[in-house]
Length: 116
Image (cartoon, rainbow, N blue to C red; front, side, top):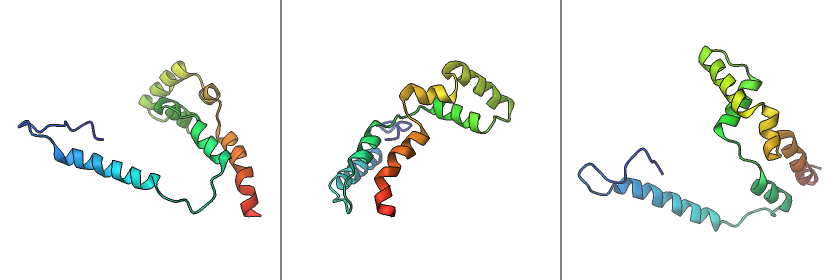
């Protein structure tokens, strides 16, 4: 839902385009939920998807800066600010108990039997 657009037009009428857009999203979601999966559900994968940590934009930006150093003065200032607030990448990931390598280690055994 686009919050940049108000729900009402300047003349006070309801913005039906916005309502129609929301209705399409709901319809697509309901259709998706009823879709029969052509493959077997894997509990390990479902558990991972339901419990994987979701990082904030600031955490992801900090990780980005630690992987590829900031270049401009503004980027360097933002990096220092984020580092002061969040610490380091390892602390961001460790805080929520997840990591990319941990995700791969968890997912690999699930798909190993399919590739052999």
